[in-house]
Every structure is written in C-alpha cells, then in structure tokens.
Image (tube, rainbow, N blue to C red; front, top):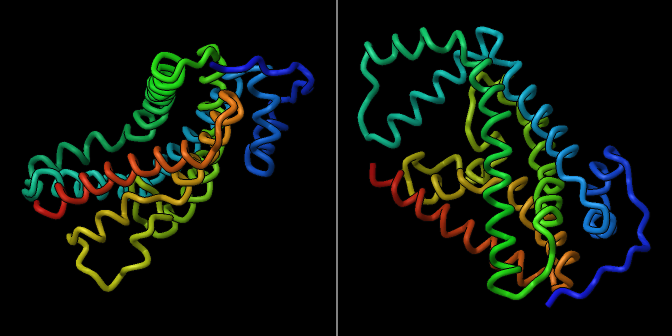
Length: 241
C-alpha cells in the first residue's frame, strides 16, 4: 500500500517545476505529487512541441524534409517504392503539413499522456495495491514530458538545417554506426533509441518512485526493457522489408 505523503513541501510555480524536472527531478516530484497540477505543464509542453515541429514546415525546406520523411517511412513499412501518382498527391497535401502537425500535437499528445497515465495507475494501484490518485500519476507523466520537449526544441533546428526529418529526431544512437547498411537490424534498432526518451523514462521512474515510495531502479529498468523489446520488434520488422 502507498503510505500517506507528508504535506510539508511547498507548491512550485510552472516554470520552476519545468526547470526542476531537468535539474533536480526527485526534489521537484516531491512537490508535484503533493500538489498535482498536470494541465498547466501539459499545455506548456504541447505548445512548445507544436511550435518546434510545426513552424519549420511553413517553409519550403521544412515541407520538403517532412515529405521526404513520409516517403521513406511508407517505403520502409510497405517494402514498395512510392509511385509518382502517390507522391504527387502527398506533395499537394504537404502545403498543409504544418497545420496538420500542430493540430495533431494538440490532439494526439493529451490522448497519449492519458493512456500512459492510465497504464501506470493500473499497474501500481490495481496490480500492486497502491493508493495514489490518478491525478497524481498524470502529474508525474506530464512533468516527465519536459525532457522530450527539450529534445524536440533542440532537434528541430538541427533537422531543418540538415534538410532531413526523422520521427525519432536527430539524436538517435544510429549515428554511432554510420558505416553499416541503413536497412540492417542494428541500425534500425539504434535508430529507435533516443537518449531523450531514455532520459524521460528514467525521470518518470523517479516520479513514480517518489509517489509510490518505491525504488527508482527497478521501475526504470522494467520500462527500459519494455522500450528495448519494442525497439527490437520494430527493427526486426524494418530489416526484413
């Protein structure tokens, strides 16, 4: 069972929490779980991510980079080249890609956060007997988004200047093996591993550990293993296309 959390930590402001997640996550989460405020930090992250990913697409360079990424993704998953007719249709729709991206972030991100929060709440409350409120779990998940938001902000200008886009961003571990075939299992596996995602998982584990008074390492290890299994599954699929 989850022990009551003492109400001795003062509430922090929005920006203080956002910075604290990066600099001192455990101390910040001690305040977050006592004063759960998931909406404000979620809105901040969504706005920043939407602008970071959407604004470059208002330029021809940005639109072309996204179009090239979409073509590559289709060809990877289908194993077939995109026809000229399909490409022309995609090129026509690309004029609105910035709007689609921004709207998609505003709609998709909250849904994703709710799903992840529900999974964590079910595991720790229903399966493991915890007593935390869903709002507290949601606050942990939304605050961990700050890490991914930083990754999006740093990655957007790099991808724009390079003229290439990737759904995983420019910081994947695939950059460590440029000599290998891009269709190989290892390249696809490492291309799925983003340091900011790993960092975000660890930060989330710290928050869940604070909330449920459990050790961080087992939580982080379990989630990272699941992340690795998913990456391996995707890499296996892509390397056989």
